[in-house]
Length: 159
Image (tube, rainbow, N blue to C red):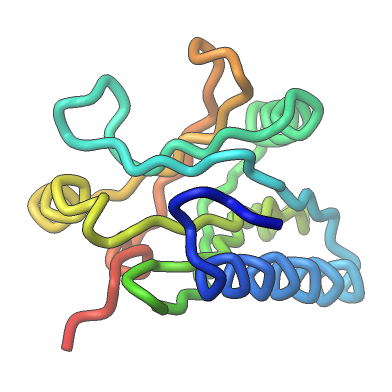
């Protein structure tokens, strides 16, 4: 598949991220957890002057509805995070596991962003010590936001 403006190494890395997400989902399921795997159509770093600062993760309507129902259910507490991160070719690749440990439920969010494209976002994350992930369908009005307790895990590693 050819994607204008995206080189083969990025596409190859993205394929590995999706494979890692699927393997992680299988491990959760083997441990008896309910897991939702997201398949973003687009991931966009949003700068601090945007209405919603952070990473905007666009998913299909069915996936969004499932996540929205899980995280807004009475008693839900999606407050634990596992982050799997790699950096290649100027891009940060992530699989973020958002967990409700008490209910043994997890949402797996694969994402990637270009470091140069996210300069303003990264700078704001470092200043504000937060890096929200906004999961949404095509409708811009509906959104589920999760915020890892350690936002540095979503940033490129510092040397």
